Image 1 (tube, helix red, strand yellow):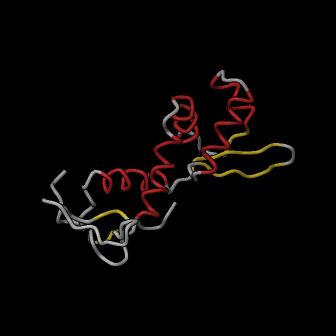
Image 2 (image 1 turned 180 degrees about the vertical axis):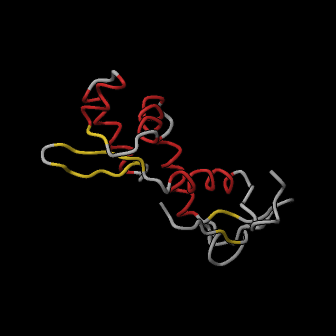
Length: 139
């Protein structure tokens, strides 16, 4: 996951050149635009969560205190081993889970950076970038 998303002003040299070489012009109400590279990363994150089984597996892992072997995920969730392995691979590829080897087992754990990075990505995509402490609405 990227450490910090990159935002640029629409039409800036670093962010919004069109395929035809012209600079994109901001439309009415345009604010900050998401960097293309970060947008591609975020699209992969959201796509990884487009399958309910992956959401179930990620939610399960987020509630575990220690890394879990695939066999335990299979037993606890009642999902086939090949299905769990396929979904864990996809979650690993986008960085939602970390994996380690312990003897013959692969252990999986949620990537704790997701807990903060994913909501921030959603806020940026929806035009709600996080404001510095004290400047946002009271909660």
